[in-house]
Amino acid sequence: MTDTIRYERTGHIARLVLNNPGQHNALGQEQLAAIQEHLEAVRADAQVRVLIITGWGEKTFCAGASLQQLGSGNLSGDQFQETTDLIAHLPIPTICAINGNVYGGGAELALSCDFRIGVAGSKLRVPAAAIGLCYPISGINRFVERLGVTTAKRMLLAAEEMDAETLLHLGFLDHLVQPAALDKVAENLALQIAKLAPLSVRAMKLVIQQAAAGNINREEANALSRQCLDSDDLQEGFAAKREKRQPRFQGK
View 1 (tube, rainbow, N blue to C red):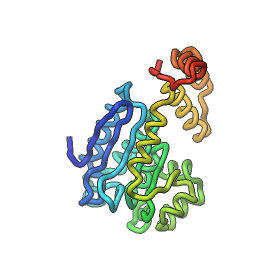
View 2 (cartoon, rainbow, N blue to C red):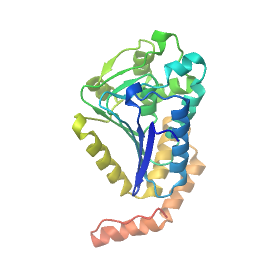
View 3 (tube, one colour):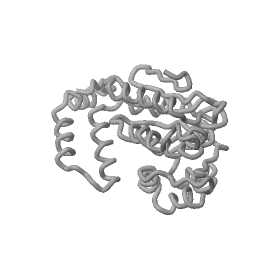
View 4 (cartoon, rainbow, N blue to C red):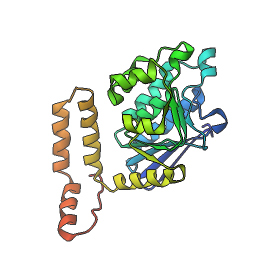
């Protein structure tokens, strides 16, 4: 396992850190394989209720796929897309704590998460058209689905550089904070989510994603709703309300 990707879990919160600031946290074949392995561990660990993805360093969150490996043929866009798809399809909420500038596929990595927190002074640019690449189809779809056609065109067709305030206005960022506050804000959001009923959160995330794609599976959605109605957690939620205390959800 490469040390340029770090993973840890504390309680119900897992953290995945891109740890190669000397290369602007660019992702090569080795890094993508490590991320995929950690994501499978997250999916298999019932104790994980939230995942935070961030980068190490003060300058760059992620420069996307390694251009050196793409140019040499040692890395394909498919492997990068497999990784972002795994993030997007995790059943638990994901928070991207964007610690600096975002380039190329780093933007899609962030868009694969459910929440994005950025830092003042950072910038984003997707230079695919500036170097002759066509962004992969599923990636383009993610830009359009998350941000709309107009913003996707600005980012992909015009390769426009955008500052953090613009990204907040366009909805790429959910929150914009000072760099020193990033970890705390991300941690507080993760703690807030981790205290909620896991079955409810997972069910609603899936239905929201299906609704965004315009393809709600009503049979599946109804089954998830019934699971929540029949859960011990619902009874715990009612009891906590009556007793005026914080609920202790177990995810069952």
